[in-house]
Length: 113
Length: 113
Image (cartoon, rainbow over all chains, first blue to last red; front, top):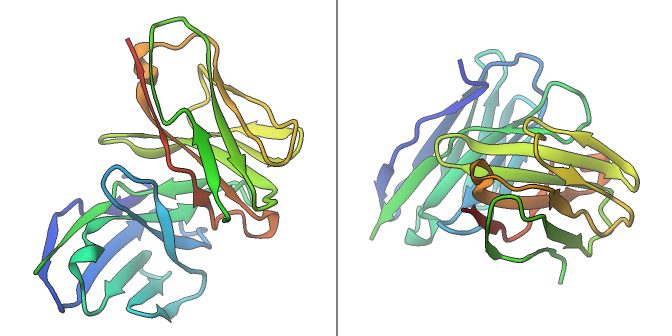
């Protein structure tokens, strides 16, 4: 079992719709959860982080964390073609405070005009 | 402008020819890290540094060296590159108190023939 799993997609949504991206992780001790966006040929960009169960909203983005079920999700409301990218889920590594991030393979999102 | 810079951005080299990829950040970050990104394997940590003169191995350190003599710089050294080190390399940095909230450089695409 991979430590962080994501559906590779592509996930295709029409412009204006809600895009829902999901991620599961295997280590129950994970404390910190991140979503990075990576455009083709570019570097990952941190867009959301969440540390507590529940929802965290930032503009059109909402991160949801459920530690009991070991999943974290990212909702993108009013999706725009500019949101088309690969979204990487990451969790902190087992050794505390090493800064090690364990990344999923990423989900490719396509927003169609 | 706050940023992480890497040089070179693209490099084609031959097996065994020593090379250095530089990484510099202007945000006074304590933490710096190197990742490689490969299709199907995602992002994997090579080395990290918690501060000046403090470095440690990540998941895939074989064939790489690093040093951290100054806070802003964290070069990645390939003493004897091999074709299996052909990859996309990213440097990242963050504040020591928020090590997981990492900012990535633009990437270096390395090809070893």
